[in-house]
Length: 293
Image 1 (cartoon, helix red, strand yellow):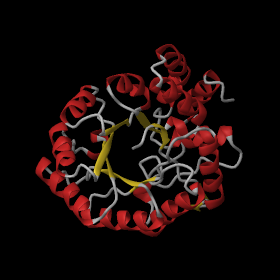
Image 2 (cartoon, rainbow, N blue to C red):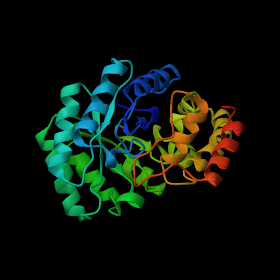
Image 3 (cartoon, helix red, strand yellow):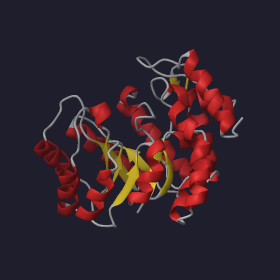
């Protein structure tokens, strides 16, 4: 259903407010540069500091500006099942093609709780769900057996996963436990090459915010089984992948975007702050290495 390079879009701010004009330009640029789908309101989009009204406006504007050119996978995750359903209901009404739903964070549900949470969402709204597992942020780990059970129960609703567990063996676990129709997307840019080799079909990417064409070309090379080209592009992108996390994300990627475009600013919302001097130095060097500045 989804594949290729899919940026987890930043949410541009200016003077504390959502910068709608800059976001529209970002959406257009991403599509022009070859991104195959867009994810608004993910982790990189600072969804945790958006009000529900802002969250919904970002989704609405992304769908509107995309205008059907690529799919929109709206970030709808919450540690409150009812709030996740609220986001999904709005995303469906707007015309999003799917919802990206992170495993509930902070309250640390059991695997049974995760089954109940995602089952409730699948049963109460007709919108495909891409699971999002990022235990480094949520603490809760969506285990392969839970993923396989959800896909078995709801084959038309639980359609894929963004896997940021860092455990590459899970790609095979999911492929053998569910099948090739289940869409596996890496949540870690630096692991995208081995992830695709194991059966993945793309990446929901931080780096693609600032290097959309390189990331799209890299994913196209993987899909064509052109390993030599994929390695060449991966080497070009590799320092940038790591620079994106030299300080709290999305600080570095917002700084990188401000270096590439004069209409984007590295403004974040507290408790996040602009990235430190060392991170900026690393980002600058990575941008040069990738040929982006």
